[in-house]
Amino acid sequence: MSTLAFTACFAVWTIFSIIGVQIRQELGLSGAEFGLLIGTPILTGSLIRLILGIWAEQYGGRIVNLAVMLSAAAATYLLSFAHTYPQFLVAALGVGVAGGAFSVGVTYVAKFFPKERQGTALGIFGAGNVGAAVTKFAAPFVMVAMGWEAVAQIWAAALAGVAILTFLVTRDDPERVARKASGEKPVRAAAQLTPLRKLQVWRFALYYFFVFGAFVALALWLPSYLVGVYGLDIKTAGMLAAAYSIPGSLFRIFGGWLSDKIGARRVMYITFGLSVICTFLLSYPATHYVIEGVRGPISFSFATGLAPFVALTFVLGFAMSLGKAAVYKHIPVYYPAHVGAVGGLVGMVGGLGGFILPIVFGLLNDLTGIWTSCFMLLFVLVASALAWMHFAIRRMEQKAAPQLRDLPGLPEMAGLVAHPSSPPAAGQSAARAGR
Image (tube, rainbow, N blue to C red):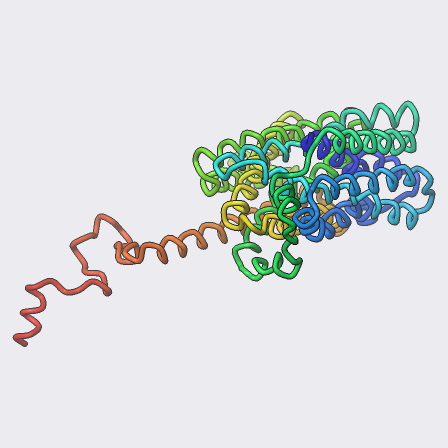
C-alpha cells in the first residue's frame, strides 16, 4: 500500500512533464521559464522532505502520509483554475507537496523489516517512481481529449482516493506502537539532526542528487526534448519517455535486492560506471565533419538516432534505479536511529536536483543552442560523484587496514625496492651499523 500511495504521489508530482508542454505553448514560455515551471513542484517536494521525515519519526508515517497526500490533492485540483504564469508557479508549489511522501514512506516502511531485508523492502517502495511513467502514458491521451485541466482534476481525485484507502487498510509501524504502549516520548527534532554534521551524509546526498535528482529532471525534460530534437508529437514523446522512466523505477526493486546480496557499495560502482558511459554518448551533439583527404574533402555526419537514443536512456534509467536503491540501503545500516532525518536530508538534496537541473537544462539550451548540453552537464556530475566515492572508499580502507599503505605501487616490484615506511632488512641494518 505504501508503494501504491507513493506511485500516486509521483504521478502527481511529475504532472507538469506532460501538461507543461501545452501550458508552455499557450503562454509562449522560454526554455528557462519552462524549466522553472516543471521544476517548481520538485522544489517544494524536496524542501519539505527533511521536516516530513522527522515528523514521520515522531508521529508515525501513516498519519503524516495521509496529510501530505490530501494536501497535494487539493493543490492539484486548484491548479486547473490557473491562467497566468505566476498563478501556475504558485499552484506548482502546492502540487509539489506530493513529493514529500517519499521521506515519510522510507521512514515508515523501514521500521517493519530487519536490516538484511531493508534494501529489498525500500527498493519495492521506491519503485513507486513508476508514477512518472503512469503520467507519461495516460496524461497525453486525457489532455488531447479533454484538455490539461481535466488531467489535473482527475489526478487530484485519484490521489485523494488512494490516500484514504491507504490510511484505512494500513497500521502504525511497530516502533510507534511500542512507544505508545510504554508512554515514551518521541526523540526531539534537534537530536534527530545530529548525524547531519557528518560529511558522509552529504556524500550520500550527492549520490542521490544524481541518481534521483537527474532521474526526475530527465523525466520532466525528455518529452520536450523528444519533441524538439526528433519532431515527435506529445503522445509519442510521452510514451517513449516512459522507456526511461519505467526502468528507472521498477528496477529499483532489483537494485534493493542486489544491494542486500552483494553490498550497496558495489552497486554504486555499477551505477556510476554505466551512467558515465551513457551520458558521454548522449552528450555528443549532431555533428558534420569535413576531412581533407588525398583525393579531396571527405565529409560525413554523426548523430544519435531515435532508436539508439531510447536504448541509451533505457540503460541510463536502469543504472539510476540501481543507485537509488543502493543509496537508501546505506542509511538504515549507518544511521538506524535517524532514518527520518538522514533519509529526509538525502531525499531533499536529491529532490533539489530535480528542481535545479531542469532550470539549468533550459538555461544551457538558451545559452548554447545545443540540445545535448543537458547530458554534458550530467556527465560532469556523475564523473565527479564517481571520483569522490572512489577516493573516499580508498581512504576508509586505508584507515581500517593501515598495512595497505605499505603495498608497492606496482605489485611486480615487491621485494626489489623497500617501501619508505618498511623497516630495513637485517643485512641492511648490519651494513649501516658498520659504516
